[in-house]
Structure formats: structure tokens, C-alpha cells
Image (cartoon, rainbow, N blue to C red; front, top):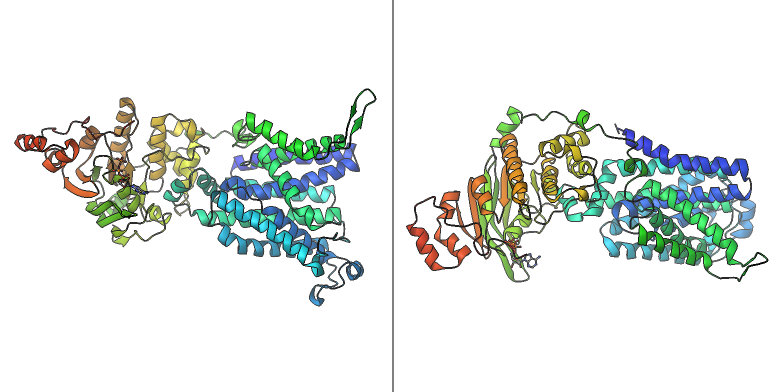
Length: 626
Ligand SMILES: Nc1ncnc2c1ncn2[C@@H]1O[C@H](COP(=O)(O)OP(=O)(O)OP(=O)(O)O)[C@@H](O)[C@H]1O
């Protein structure tokens, strides 16, 4: 059963009230032209929300959704066309389509099936693309739809006006559709699927590393957004009664994108607000476009004033407010109209149940002959070691030794060239990157990769919802993990606003929410001050004691490594040169030579008693250049 959160309901009410108010004001005080304008506003809101479901949540601007509006408009128009008018307007319509004359609602349902089928077909390749390539592909789709509509004269009257569509839509028909669109868009945004897609918008690699199947999520949003756009197209067709392919082309795309961007691309309230602002600007400028004569002041006719006005409005808003008028968070979230009761929601942290701990005691993560070549450069060769539950393994080596390459190969971010990675016997080297965390291996990144425009709790919830944990609420579990790393009180803050040390701990919490059996930490103390490092040490000690995870820690801070680790693996120039206890590693001549680069030091080390800390933490090569 889908559980609808209180903040989602509040958000839906907040975004729906202006729609109802606009409709009520128009029908009470401005019947006629006012009602007409507000009906168009409702239809635009549906279209903008349709684009926003895909574009806002994935971060990929779509030029293609107006193509789905066109398909919805023509499909439902064809199905509802009066048979007598159809004989005049479309005399060459094939038999199986001729004389349908269906009522609006069944025609709409069939039109949406057509839209969904096309969206699925186009979505398969488009969902594999990201960034500007995806945007260009959506533009290509819009152009194809336009060309097909113009060329299919038997069905569409080509570039001529397609007329005679029953005018089944008025203000009070459009309003429930607009409110339904708000409900769908907000439910999707707050759903696990929407959250995952928003996470991928923030950082695709990090979202894959917490189990998000980015292509699947993009595909789902693309189809859902297309269906909403199809609804808007069909409503517009039955509101206008006549249209042509050029009504569903660049001008409309530009206007709808302007509404989305001006309001704030990521929010439902942004779509509702942005559509209102742009429509007001358009109405005002249309009146001025034909010239104004106020007696004392005469303004000449200015062609294109409306488009210029929209462009200027976007420029002004973007200059002052990069994320649009409504920002990246919904109105209700920003003003705390729904406030999470953090303390109440924190489930007391339990120790790992005995059975789980026992299970954690078995198995291992085995790295076997792992190697990686980048265009001829051997970054890693023949790495062989084992990570065991409850054991902390350190991975050290000078700059460029191959540590990050190893971690990336083990976690599936880069496919290894040779070797295997076995998690409790299962080879994960061939798994898709988003499947590796689900198999029991989580990681953090050398350069922090948080979802900065998501809240702290959302960052962790994305990971928690990657697992199908029998009935457990991902948000509640996320809060529990946050309290574990001392961040529960910041649950509702945007992740990007946390201090550096807290961001590092949040990355660890996000990884822990995956309930991993093995955890790879890539330079967790990098850039931390001594107090933050100390705090991190406590967190890692707690995690180790509580969860009995197999930890692999890559660090340049040798003091931290020697204090925390049971076993240390050393890489140099892509080769594994040593493995042993911290004391053995500190006295290993090859390791000292790799770091200090002098035979003399190695000779000195050989004479030193075992356990003497020969490797100073400030040794050359231990720290990256600033
Ligand atoms: N994507 C890549 N393409 C080409 N070469 C790469 C790539 N990633 C790493 N390398 C090279 O592989 C070698 C090992 O790099 P890697 O980042 O794994 O080292 P590292 O031990 O993590 O270094 P650091 O401590 O500086 O992070 C380096 O020579 C690096 O330039």
C-alpha cells in the first residue's frame, strides 16, 4: 500500500488552492474573457507539470513534451470529430477511423493510450541519455512529430487548420484535471521513484552508488510526464475546437519552458506560480504589442513584444534567483508548514540482532587479481586481498598509486579490466553499478558527492529505499541512521548547507542506510580539521562495533589508519606491494621506500624495532598537493 505523507497532502492543498481561487474569481467577476484565460491557465499548468515531472526531477530540459500534447490533441480530435464535419474536413480518412464521433472522455482515454505507447517507444532510447544529449533527442522528437503531422494530410489536414472538434472543455472541466495533475505531480515528486530521480539529477554517479537505476527512473518519469502533456493537448483541442501543427511547436514549447524555468523547474508550486506569472506578462504585453494611445502618450506597434517580454522576465528572474521564483523546495517545505517531529520519529538505535551479527561474521569480500588499464596506462594490477566482517582494512599508497581506481573497480563505478570481486562468493564485477550496493557493498567518495539540493534526510532516504526491507519505512530508518552519526537534528536542512565534516558524516550515513555488509570509505578524513577527524574516528569506531561491517578505508592520514585498522594493504604505482598489520606495514622497507623513495630509509627501518612508527604522517607523498 502506498503511504501518503502529511507533507504531501499539505503540498497538494497549497498548490491547488490558487487554482481554485483563480477559477472562482474568474467565473464570479470576469465571466467570458476571464474564464477563457483561466481555462487556458489550467491547461498550461497541466502541460508545465507534465514537462516538470521529467525535466524538473531529472534535471534534463525536455523540448519534446509539446509533441505529446500534439499527439493527444490530434488523437482525441480525430476520435470525437462529428461524422458530417469529418466528411468535409477529412474526406480521405481511412475507413477504420472514419465517423467515430466518440464522446470526449472515452476519446481522451484512447488518446492517452496512444500517447503512452509513443512515449514508451521514444523513452527507451531517450532514457539512456543524460544532460544535453537527452535534451537534443527530445528536440528531435518534437521536430519529427511536427513533420509527421504536416505530412499526414489524410489524418490531420496537414499544415491547414484541423477544425470541427467538439468544444467539450470549459473552465469547470479544466479545473479538476488541473488539480488532478497537481496531485499526480506532487505524489510522484514525494514518492520513492521521484526522490530517486531527483537524487540522480543532483549526482548521477552517487545515486547509482546508492542503488538508483537512473535509466529506469528517467524512463518512468518520461512516460508519466508525456501522459500529462497528452491530457493538456487533448483539453486544449476541445477548448479551442480548431488548431494546426504550428500551434504545437516552438512557440508553445518556449512559453511552457519559460513558465517552468521562471517558477522553478523542480517544484509543483513553481509550475503553478510560473504559469500564472508568464500568462499575466503575456496578456499585458499582448495589449501593448499593437500600440497604445493614451492621448498624452502614444506607444508604437512592437512586433514580438510578448516573446521579448518573456525572455526579459526569465533573464531578470534568473539573474536574481537562479532556481526560479519558488526555488528548489516546495513552498510548504520552505516555510515549514509541515514540520517533522525529529525526536518522535527517531527509532531508538538497536544493536545488530544476534542472528544478523552472526551472519555478518561469515563470508568475505574477496578481491582477486583485480586490474584496470586506462588507454594503455596500467592504473592497477593484480590486487589480491580480502575484507572480512568486523575487520577494518586500510588501503594506503602515495598519490597515483591506484587506490581510487581499486575502490571504483570494486564498487562497479569503473569496470575492471581483469580479475574478480566476490561478495560472499557472488561475482559482482559484472553487475550494473546500481546493483552492487544491493548486493551488500556501499561506498563513499573521495570528493564528497552528496545530493546537495535534497534535505539531509532525503539524502539518506534515497539509499534506504533502494532495499526492499519488509514494511520498514525508509524515512524512519534514514532518521535512525542519521541519529547514529549525530545528524538527526539537521534532518530537514539542505545537505549542501552542512559543515564540511557533517557532510562527510552524512555520506557515511547514506552508505549505512543501504545496510551494507561491506563499506568502502574513500579518504573519509580528507580536508577535515583535527576536531572533525576525531569526531569521525568516534563514528567509525561506533559503526565497527555495532554493525560488524567489513570496512575498507582509503586514507592519506596514516595516524588514522594505524589507529583504526586491523590490516593494511599498500599500493604503489598500481602494484600491491604489501599487506599486514599496521606494525608490520610501518616497518616494511618496501613501503617506506615507496613513501620516502630512498634506500637509506629502508635500511634504517630494517634496524628499527618492530612497532616503531617509522612512517611519519607528514612524509612526502602522503598528502595531496593543495
Ligand atoms: N579515468 C581515468 N583515465 C585515465 N587515467 C586514470 C583515470 N583514473 C585514474 N587514472 C590514472 O590511474 C593512476 C592511478 O590513479 P588513482 O586516482 O587510482 O590513484 P590514487 O592512489 O587514488 O591517487 P590519489 O591518492 O592522488 O587519489 C594515475 O596515474 C591516474 O592518473
